[in-house]
Image (tube, rainbow, N blue to C red):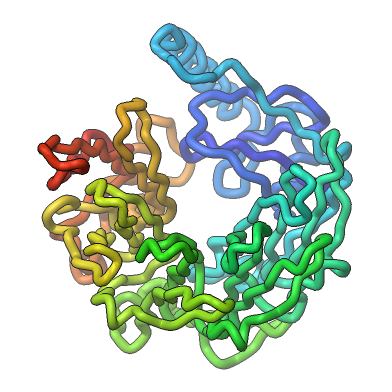
Amino acid sequence: MPLCLVILVDTWLQIRCSGLKILVIAAITWFTVHSHRAHEAVQAAGTGVGLIYRGTILEGPSHDKEMRWLQARKQAQIKTLDKFSVFHDFQFSDRCPESRITFKHGIVDDAAKQYKAIHYDHGNGLAAADVDADSRVDLYFVNQLGSNELWRNLGKGQFENITELAGVGLANRISVTASFADIDNDGDQDLFVTTVRTGNVLFENIGNGRFADITQNAGLAYSGHSSGAVFSDYDQDGLLDLFLTNVGRYTTDQKGRGGYFIGMADGFSGHLHQDRSEGCVLYRNQGNKRFLNVTAKVGLREFGWSGDASFADLNRDSFPDLYVLNMQGNDHYFENVKGKSFVDKTDVYFPKTPWGSMGIKFFDYDNDGLIDLLVTDMHSDMSYDLGYVTQEEEKKKSEMQWSNDVLKGHEKSIWGMPFTKIWARASLQRFPTRSELKTIGRGG
């Protein structure tokens, strides 16, 4: 099955293969996938553009209507190019055959033929880093069923599979995502992999594309419903610490094909059951490749069902603050107090957050030296199934239909993707003493 490049266009998937140029319009993100559905869609679409709505390829009038809409969006964006100061004149093209990458994504049955609305359907991550110090970025693919794979960049757009050499396959685990970080300050990238109830893993990079499993000695052998792993030096001692996000218990003890834990029938409503909560963990890097759980010690708590998080120094005091996503409730913002503790300042700076946060990116969008925030939202537009409709009608999906009993914390929720502009109030000190955060826009 070939690797296909997918552009996410609002609620639509636009797929191009066979080396054709990609129409980059109205796209909010792009990623690679290896699903049977995507492959079949590409085969059905041939060498043209396949527009997919909920797994169905649009044809005839529906397809033509959407293509006209996409072209109109393209022209509208082209008219704004004179306002752009960043590099933007580029296109993407599918180079999978030339890359020699043959990784196949295997998914558990709960995300396929026995589909349940639980968190297996979020898929897997991909990590990129130069693992062998040859100045080329290598790729680590993560799998639910089957081996993870590490592909060494050979240059000129070509890769080779060095998974066996590296010893990082983890074929018998249900992996979720991975992160590279130099945890021992030896100049190379070590690897941390999260899993669903099969034990997280820390690999030390021992050089020449090889890794050693040091999980047990490092104190990172947590086994639960883990998701994102974020490295940052929260206490500024020169060592990278680890913040591990855990979703919450959504599986039973019964195992299915490939050894995965079968999901609960009511797994999507797990946030309503306090006994299913599974808190995130902050590990402090103690040095000598050892970590210590300091979550309670630094005052971190009340995370919700989290799949990801990010550090950023929002108040400019040199200590990274922490924003934790909640995919079924309200997010949390913790201000770092000189690397000694964290204080929940969500109500002060983020009084309303998405109900269903899935992705996060801190970046300086207007180059004013201050970090801004974009949070992507998923679940808050899932309450209203309209079927195939026009683009204007599609926006009605953000009109929340679930009852307040389901929407835990709904009083502080918004429905859509918030974009937050961060202002800093200057003072006579080196860093501002106070930051003002304001949500200036959101998707609907």
